[in-house]
Image (tube, rainbow, N blue to C red; front, top):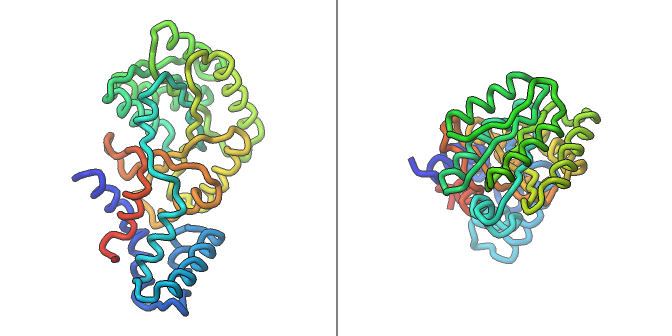
Length: 296
């Protein structure tokens, strides 16, 4: 199965909500569509914006199908498509991966590492989540699986010290990409945010010719809670891009639209399954086309 087919399949639950709403609506009465968008976790602000645009577009083009007009409005919310993997192929990078426990951080690190290694880049993982022995073990399992070395300390060690050693090792071995795992306790915990800021400061101080990219991983099944997480992490750490995981298991795929509309943070990676190749660089055109498959 090709990547677009996997994405389309992953969005089936979200697409079904929207498709059903089009069966009995008109431009004068969009209540069913409003309910569908909210149910898909597009969010109240973005839903209101889209419905207002839809009404205005229909007045200007009354012969157009409402689904086509909505598709156009959603497409316009996204920045022009770009491939984050291609970006990481140029120069050296430290990718600081953040997010709450259970969001799929470690899996994202493993899959991203494989994507980059397959493109010819040298990669190391840094086990910066020292609060859970299981987190270190999980990263080591992924390292063995994809053939990428892991820099680690003992459980309970200072995450900043692990990041320091990871960068030191990368510079000594002329590694292209350093991917740093971090602790993922609840985003409302002040100490966690301060700890992540410290890790970021260590990387900023030691990175030399490496560029720093802060990647937030969110679980699509969390819906609007994912928006709140993204907002909190962004305020603390200035998130550069977001990886959305578990898009295949939810009808809440509209959260992708909400994040881009409300927070203006680009979605750069998307995961639609458990297989090692089920994560790819996010392409907004593919996402919207998959969301509106067979509706036009």
